[in-house]
Image (cartoon, rainbow over all chains, first blue to last red; front, side):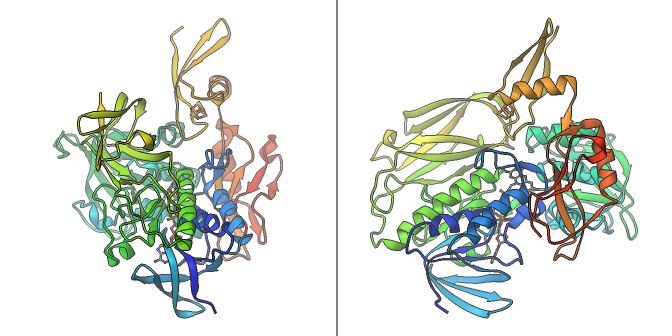
Length: 422
Length: 117
Ligand SMILES: Cc1cc2nc3c(=O)[nH]c(=O)nc-3n(C[C@H](O)[C@H](O)[C@H](O)COP(=O)(O)OP(=O)(O)OC[C@H]3O[C@@H](n4cnc5c(N)ncnc54)[C@H](O)[C@@H]3O)c2cc1C
Ligand code: SF4
């Protein structure tokens, strides 16, 4: 077995699939794709709903169909796929240690490594709800896997805490499975889910959405029997006298995703406070030159199409990186944001690729903390305005995309800052 | 007539549409692409939805096969369709894209597999 690769991709979700097949398109680039599960496709295998692929494939697919396309192109490529193989560590930015069901303990060497481990749900422990600890409380993603892949009945009378997309999708899913969904409670005064999901997952089935509400009490001996919700004030404290109780056997927690970054932390990559993923530049390169990151491991995305797009970019640049010896010489521009934004990616911008070819634009993604019907996005370097763009319907559930003209960035500038002006 | 506010759900952009009926003619504002106009027309007359769910699966490594309707079905038939699909079962191997049931519940809609098993 030849353990030496030009590019090794960790994680076989849509990010890993797109990165690996793009890297392998370059002749002479040897690529390995490592997935801990028995199937490729990642989280898409449990996403049976439509809403995927409109940008990337120009047609609307289900998550599983989108995964199918990626898997087909990997099967048609020269990529070596390792299934049921868990990456345990990455040393010196090149040596990947994995434990495989069939091969046992294996060490691979890669000229460049792409991290595509996706994200995971915040644990149940991160939401503290007073009361007993009966069964019947699941994270929404776990319930989605039970229902859509394993085919298990999760419950009959369901309440959902959190109105992010997974919570909304599960409200419809449980309804179609014959369960009664009593309501969705959201702590914030707005939903962080896509607007279309509020329409087609809640309004279509007359499921009430309780904004500025949280679960304050859980009751039940062995199985969940009843929950109590209450309205919260501006500081998110429950207001007494506003309680409502619901008799239910199931509570789904849709409380957000965080990038899966065990390996990134192990490697001591520079991490970003807002994305909770590694700091990356527009070539998807992390603070360790031979290590790249794309997909949900770098930042939680709402559209898989964007995941594939940036993963292809990662695949392309890593393939070049693995074949060139020139290190990055130029100093990257740092991207900062004002308080209106909860996320920005990438956080560094470079003007040249690894072949020293000038890049014209860079895609910048931002997430606002609260909704705005209309606002200006302004990019400044010190006091100098570089870009000014009008944006309508900004919401936390939908990332804002801007193409930054790299030629407009002042050469000597080391920091640019994005402001939101209402 | 006052314009009706609807959110186009044809794609994840979720444009906020303002729909006005003017002497039988549909006036749509706020759509970022032509599909928004089609959505508005259908939503105002006969609302339809795509249905995705799973059906029982045997002789495969997984227990459920994800499926979808190949086109939107009348919104008021969605629940009945899902109820019916809880009674059917399929056997692997199946290819992503295979038609499993044609003209389901007497409509012009077919049921299609969305994963290969
Ligand atoms: C409920 C839900 C609904 C969604 N709805 C939509 C939608 O309507 N439209 C849309 O476009 N997008 C949607 N998305 C988003 C989209 O699915 C994700 O953005 C996309 O799947 C992220 O891809 P990824 O490859 O980064 O991560 P993942 O799909 O999570 O893949 C990561 C892979 O890495 C593997 N892995 C992790 N660690 C290791 C390791 N150490 N060794 C080996 N393998 C490892 C995991 O097993 C997994 O297979 C939805 C997501 C969810 C959860
Ligand atoms: S109008 Fe077009 S872009 Fe807007 S939500 Fe509908 S389909 Fe999407």
